[in-house]
Length: 238
Image (cartoon, rainbow, N blue to C red; front, side, top):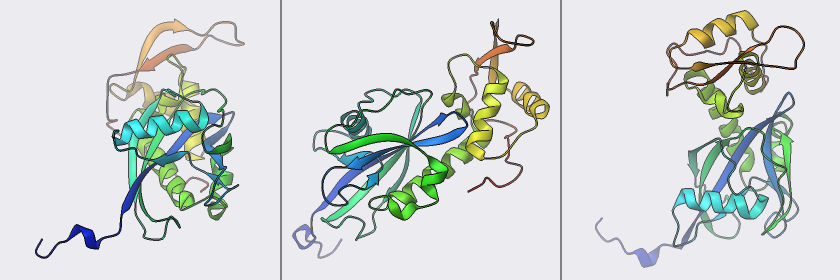
Protein backbone atom coordinates (compact mmCIF):
# COMPACT_ATOMS: atom_id res chain seq x y z
CA UNK A 1 0.00 0.00 0.00
CA UNK A 2 1.53 3.30 -1.09
CA UNK A 3 2.32 5.67 1.76
CA UNK A 4 1.47 3.13 4.49
CA UNK A 5 3.12 4.02 7.80
CA UNK A 6 2.17 1.67 10.68
CA UNK A 7 3.28 4.31 13.19
CA UNK A 8 0.31 6.45 12.19
CA UNK A 9 -2.20 3.83 13.40
CA UNK A 10 -3.22 3.41 17.03
CA UNK A 11 -2.51 0.05 18.68
CA UNK A 12 -5.13 -2.66 18.34
CA UNK A 13 -5.61 -5.50 20.82
CA UNK A 14 -7.11 -8.92 20.10
CA UNK A 15 -9.36 -10.81 22.50
CA UNK A 16 -11.34 -14.03 22.46
CA UNK A 17 -14.87 -14.50 23.80
CA UNK A 18 -16.73 -17.76 24.26
CA UNK A 19 -20.39 -18.62 23.73
CA UNK A 20 -20.51 -21.83 25.77
CA UNK A 21 -23.88 -23.58 25.52
CA UNK A 22 -25.28 -26.60 27.31
CA UNK A 23 -28.68 -28.01 28.21
CA UNK A 24 -29.89 -27.86 31.80
CA UNK A 25 -33.22 -29.57 32.26
CA UNK A 26 -35.39 -28.29 29.44
CA UNK A 27 -33.47 -25.06 28.89
CA UNK A 28 -30.62 -24.04 26.64
CA UNK A 29 -28.12 -22.38 28.98
CA UNK A 30 -25.11 -20.13 28.42
CA UNK A 31 -22.07 -19.70 30.63
CA UNK A 32 -21.75 -16.15 32.01
CA UNK A 33 -19.14 -14.56 34.27
CA UNK A 34 -19.55 -11.47 36.44
CA UNK A 35 -16.77 -8.98 35.73
CA UNK A 36 -14.65 -8.11 38.75
CA UNK A 37 -12.80 -5.20 37.13
CA UNK A 38 -13.51 -2.18 34.94
CA UNK A 39 -14.88 -1.64 32.41
CA UNK A 40 -18.38 -2.92 33.14
CA UNK A 41 -17.42 -4.00 36.66
CA UNK A 42 -20.22 -6.07 38.17
CA UNK A 43 -21.90 -6.78 34.82
CA UNK A 44 -22.40 -10.26 33.43
CA UNK A 45 -20.41 -11.13 30.32
CA UNK A 46 -19.27 -14.01 28.18
CA UNK A 47 -15.99 -15.54 29.37
CA UNK A 48 -12.95 -14.29 27.48
CA UNK A 49 -9.90 -12.07 27.54
CA UNK A 50 -6.83 -10.80 25.73
CA UNK A 51 -4.73 -13.03 23.47
CA UNK A 52 -1.15 -13.37 24.68
CA UNK A 53 1.76 -12.85 22.23
CA UNK A 54 2.86 -16.49 22.47
CA UNK A 55 -0.49 -18.21 21.83
CA UNK A 56 -2.86 -18.73 18.94
CA UNK A 57 -6.60 -18.06 19.10
CA UNK A 58 -7.80 -21.56 20.13
CA UNK A 59 -5.14 -21.69 22.84
CA UNK A 60 -6.27 -18.31 24.15
CA UNK A 61 -9.91 -19.42 24.15
CA UNK A 62 -9.19 -22.55 26.17
CA UNK A 63 -6.91 -20.71 28.59
CA UNK A 64 -9.47 -18.00 29.27
CA UNK A 65 -12.16 -20.59 29.80
CA UNK A 66 -10.03 -22.39 32.38
CA UNK A 67 -8.93 -19.18 34.16
CA UNK A 68 -12.37 -17.62 34.46
CA UNK A 69 -14.51 -20.70 35.10
CA UNK A 70 -12.33 -23.63 36.12
CA UNK A 71 -13.46 -25.61 33.05
CA UNK A 72 -10.06 -26.67 31.70
CA UNK A 73 -11.49 -29.07 29.12
CA UNK A 74 -15.25 -28.81 28.62
CA UNK A 75 -15.27 -31.44 25.88
CA UNK A 76 -18.01 -31.30 23.28
CA UNK A 77 -17.57 -29.11 20.22
CA UNK A 78 -15.57 -25.89 19.79
CA UNK A 79 -15.57 -23.76 16.63
CA UNK A 80 -14.80 -20.20 15.65
CA UNK A 81 -18.01 -18.17 15.45
CA UNK A 82 -17.16 -14.71 14.08
CA UNK A 83 -15.01 -11.62 14.65
CA UNK A 84 -16.29 -8.30 16.02
CA UNK A 85 -14.46 -5.01 15.59
CA UNK A 86 -16.67 -1.98 16.05
CA UNK A 87 -14.35 0.93 16.98
CA UNK A 88 -16.15 1.71 20.27
CA UNK A 89 -16.96 -1.81 21.46
CA UNK A 90 -14.37 -1.51 24.26
CA UNK A 91 -13.93 1.84 26.07
CA UNK A 92 -10.27 1.12 26.89
CA UNK A 93 -8.86 0.99 23.35
CA UNK A 94 -9.50 -0.44 19.90
CA UNK A 95 -10.18 -4.13 20.52
CA UNK A 96 -11.07 -6.78 17.95
CA UNK A 97 -12.52 -9.96 19.42
CA UNK A 98 -12.77 -13.42 17.88
CA UNK A 99 -15.73 -15.33 19.31
CA UNK A 100 -15.91 -19.09 19.70
CA UNK A 101 -18.96 -21.32 20.02
CA UNK A 102 -18.78 -24.38 22.26
CA UNK A 103 -21.48 -27.04 22.72
CA UNK A 104 -20.91 -29.21 25.76
CA UNK A 105 -22.79 -32.07 27.48
CA UNK A 106 -23.30 -32.02 31.26
CA UNK A 107 -20.39 -29.75 32.26
CA UNK A 108 -19.49 -29.34 35.94
CA UNK A 109 -20.52 -26.25 37.87
CA UNK A 110 -18.18 -23.39 36.87
CA UNK A 111 -15.82 -21.85 39.42
CA UNK A 112 -14.96 -18.18 38.96
CA UNK A 113 -11.32 -17.17 38.88
CA UNK A 114 -8.89 -14.61 37.45
CA UNK A 115 -10.81 -11.38 36.72
CA UNK A 116 -14.26 -12.97 37.16
CA UNK A 117 -16.16 -12.39 40.41
CA UNK A 118 -18.66 -15.18 39.74
CA UNK A 119 -19.68 -17.66 37.07
CA UNK A 120 -23.02 -19.30 36.37
CA UNK A 121 -25.14 -21.06 33.79
CA UNK A 122 -27.99 -18.77 32.74
CA UNK A 123 -31.02 -19.55 30.55
CA UNK A 124 -30.05 -18.37 27.07
CA UNK A 125 -33.56 -17.25 26.16
CA UNK A 126 -33.92 -15.12 29.30
CA UNK A 127 -30.51 -13.57 28.66
CA UNK A 128 -31.36 -12.79 25.04
CA UNK A 129 -34.53 -11.04 26.21
CA UNK A 130 -32.30 -8.32 27.73
CA UNK A 131 -29.07 -8.33 25.67
CA UNK A 132 -28.22 -4.77 26.71
CA UNK A 133 -27.57 -5.99 30.25
CA UNK A 134 -24.46 -7.88 29.17
CA UNK A 135 -21.07 -6.14 29.07
CA UNK A 136 -19.51 -4.88 25.84
CA UNK A 137 -21.39 -6.16 22.76
CA UNK A 138 -21.82 -9.62 24.25
CA UNK A 139 -25.58 -9.55 23.77
CA UNK A 140 -25.10 -9.52 20.01
CA UNK A 141 -22.37 -12.17 20.15
CA UNK A 142 -24.64 -14.44 22.20
CA UNK A 143 -27.48 -13.94 19.73
CA UNK A 144 -25.20 -14.93 16.86
CA UNK A 145 -23.92 -17.95 18.77
CA UNK A 146 -27.39 -19.27 19.59
CA UNK A 147 -28.52 -18.83 15.99
CA UNK A 148 -25.38 -20.61 14.75
CA UNK A 149 -26.13 -23.52 17.09
CA UNK A 150 -29.73 -23.70 15.85
CA UNK A 151 -28.62 -23.66 12.23
CA UNK A 152 -25.85 -26.22 12.75
CA UNK A 153 -28.39 -28.68 14.11
CA UNK A 154 -30.25 -28.53 10.79
CA UNK A 155 -27.43 -29.72 8.55
CA UNK A 156 -24.79 -31.30 10.83
CA UNK A 157 -24.88 -34.04 13.51
CA UNK A 158 -23.68 -31.66 16.21
CA UNK A 159 -26.79 -32.21 18.34
CA UNK A 160 -24.91 -35.27 19.60
CA UNK A 161 -22.40 -32.87 21.22
CA UNK A 162 -25.09 -32.15 23.81
CA UNK A 163 -25.63 -35.87 24.46
CA UNK A 164 -23.61 -38.47 26.39
CA UNK A 165 -21.53 -40.98 24.43
CA UNK A 166 -24.56 -43.28 24.15
CA UNK A 167 -28.06 -41.85 23.92
CA UNK A 168 -31.61 -42.66 22.92
CA UNK A 169 -33.39 -41.07 20.00
CA UNK A 170 -35.76 -39.47 22.53
CA UNK A 171 -32.77 -37.78 24.22
CA UNK A 172 -31.52 -36.57 20.85
CA UNK A 173 -34.98 -35.23 20.00
CA UNK A 174 -35.10 -33.29 23.28
CA UNK A 175 -31.85 -31.58 22.27
CA UNK A 176 -33.47 -30.36 19.07
CA UNK A 177 -36.62 -29.27 20.89
CA UNK A 178 -34.61 -27.36 23.49
CA UNK A 179 -32.23 -25.61 21.09
CA UNK A 180 -34.87 -24.83 18.46
CA UNK A 181 -37.59 -24.01 20.97
CA UNK A 182 -40.23 -26.05 19.13
CA UNK A 183 -41.95 -29.39 19.84
CA UNK A 184 -41.24 -32.21 17.37
CA UNK A 185 -43.30 -35.23 16.48
CA UNK A 186 -41.55 -38.23 18.14
CA UNK A 187 -42.29 -40.77 15.40
CA UNK A 188 -41.38 -38.44 12.56
CA UNK A 189 -38.13 -37.42 14.25
CA UNK A 190 -37.21 -41.05 14.99
CA UNK A 191 -37.72 -41.94 11.34
CA UNK A 192 -35.64 -39.01 10.09
CA UNK A 193 -32.82 -39.51 12.60
CA UNK A 194 -32.42 -43.23 12.01
CA UNK A 195 -32.78 -43.03 8.21
CA UNK A 196 -30.36 -40.15 7.61
CA UNK A 197 -27.08 -41.74 6.47
CA UNK A 198 -24.30 -41.53 9.05
CA UNK A 199 -26.28 -39.51 11.60
CA UNK A 200 -26.56 -42.11 14.36
CA UNK A 201 -25.35 -45.68 14.76
CA UNK A 202 -27.03 -48.28 16.99
CA UNK A 203 -24.75 -49.62 19.72
CA UNK A 204 -26.65 -52.86 20.17
CA UNK A 205 -27.42 -51.96 23.79
CA UNK A 206 -30.65 -50.75 25.37
CA UNK A 207 -31.63 -48.69 28.39
CA UNK A 208 -32.13 -50.54 31.66
CA UNK A 209 -33.84 -49.81 34.96
CA UNK A 210 -36.51 -47.59 33.43
CA UNK A 211 -40.27 -47.88 33.13
CA UNK A 212 -41.77 -49.17 29.92
CA UNK A 213 -39.97 -50.86 27.05
CA UNK A 214 -36.18 -50.59 26.95
CA UNK A 215 -35.06 -48.01 24.38
CA UNK A 216 -32.29 -48.68 21.90
CA UNK A 217 -29.05 -46.80 22.47
CA UNK A 218 -27.19 -44.99 19.70
CA UNK A 219 -23.90 -43.17 19.24
CA UNK A 220 -22.90 -40.44 16.83
CA UNK A 221 -22.28 -41.69 13.31
CA UNK A 222 -19.48 -40.85 10.92
CA UNK A 223 -21.32 -38.21 8.89
CA UNK A 224 -20.11 -34.62 9.01
CA UNK A 225 -23.20 -33.28 7.24
CA UNK A 226 -26.83 -34.38 7.22
CA UNK A 227 -28.36 -35.18 3.86
CA UNK A 228 -31.25 -34.58 3.86
CA UNK A 229 -31.10 -31.83 6.47
CA UNK A 230 -33.45 -31.76 9.49
CA UNK A 231 -35.14 -28.46 8.84
CA UNK A 232 -36.92 -26.36 11.44
CA UNK A 233 -40.65 -26.53 10.78
CA UNK A 234 -41.32 -23.15 12.37
CA UNK A 235 -39.39 -20.31 13.95
CA UNK A 236 -37.99 -20.79 17.47
CA UNK A 237 -39.30 -18.71 20.34
CA UNK A 238 -36.53 -16.16 19.86
